[in-house]
Length: 69
View (cartoon, rainbow, N blue to C red):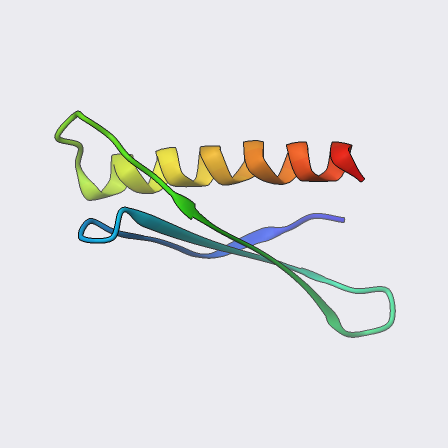
């Protein structure tokens, strides 16, 4: 199952990140995986760099969640 990135957003005020991944399902539907988490950085990063870091952290979180089940 290959997921594609649909959204990766970061709100600087609340320090929250939102990542949405989607993949086609065997039944003809769609699988949606989302992660909402706190993301803090001390560096002054560009919007693109923040998006890359947010996606990287979301992958890490989802892998840990899968291993816990």
